Picture 1 (cartoon, rainbow over the protein chains, first blue to last red):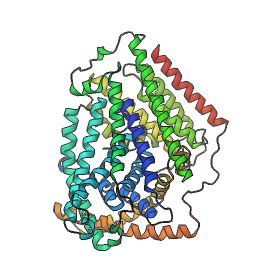
Picture 2: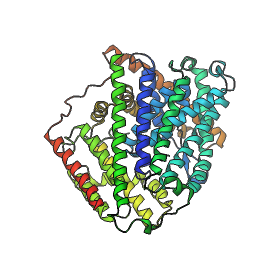
Picture 3: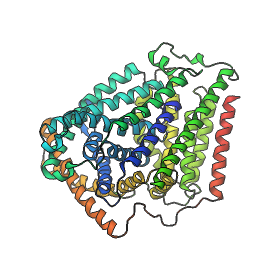
Length: 301
Length: 237
């Protein structure tokens, strides 16, 4: 599910970079992890644990193999914000150590694999009731559905991004990804539920709180806004002279090799680059601005 | 397990190694964006980028077969995904494939010419939040311990059974193994953390003799900028 560089168009990859970057900065500011507290080592160890657990492959049908993703497990244990941060560090480490997932595609990977799995898993888990962890009833079931849904939603996001980029058409990618991950998700769900049950039995103290980070209504609004940014960017960019990703997606205008303007000096070509570079500069500027803002806030507090 | 399988060649002393981590992060990101924005029909530009990357590979002193081996590990997935490229037949496949490979080699070069602690320091200076950097440095340190533990457990499991159990049993086994690994890791992490706190840990890991921004970096950055700008101009003409 890790997307390497080259499969997403710059527009999608960079806008997701900005979204993920801003999201991580926000989560880091919001989560307020005390370094001398007990969340910090557990976070680090869980990150290493998920990284290592992803190396334990198990066979799925047809000679392929799957592995644990673990986002929903982290979200349940640590809360969605810290879970996302922890998962993001796993994804960054995978890109840096194993070159699994690209550098510019990092934003997309963080979005799919950490943010989406953590939040969808957490939301599904919470559907089973507020006191599910304390009571321990249906814990396995809740963990199972959290794990399964998180994998499905995340793979659907991945397929959509690839489809919008024109790398893998949606009508092939989406069913393929979903059917494959429906099986992987079963194992993910069972492992999530199993580990949760096991932890409740052996170390119930770890399960009691979620590191003190609930996720209130303002946070949900913020998250929605964050997701709305790339969608808006895509729509705005769709009105430019670039090939419209949505049209490409729907297969309305299949782009033949001759569709590229024969004369590269034509104004639309230059316009393309103007738009592209303007969008790039805008995105980078936005990223810097957000990081400045967050930093100055933190230094004041 | 070898303890340097992640950044084995990061301690060399080549022109690429002596650069400041921030310079490298920015320049490599820019180069990857450059590779990604090459128009699909411009084969010549792909050659120019490949040539530039080859020059950097030569300067980096990282053995060629190591880079190729690393790239080969990820080749199956890239091939599979490129084969699904819907448009333009061979051309679409080739473009996706070449782009992905070039970016992959750039990433391999970046991580294998920079020590991880340096890379983290660079990220930190570029605005990465402390908690993320801290988490990454924990991950890096715990990973080897954990992987060894996991491999020991896997070996123990393989010694005790002769054939693979039915699927359900297998899952039960795997999840209890994961649980045990988790508990052991937690306890170890808590021990380590209190040991670190009692020795004055404050959230940042100091780097011994960090690289400084020097004229090397200035030269490298300007060459990379010039390269990317000129290729952009070239595509516009």
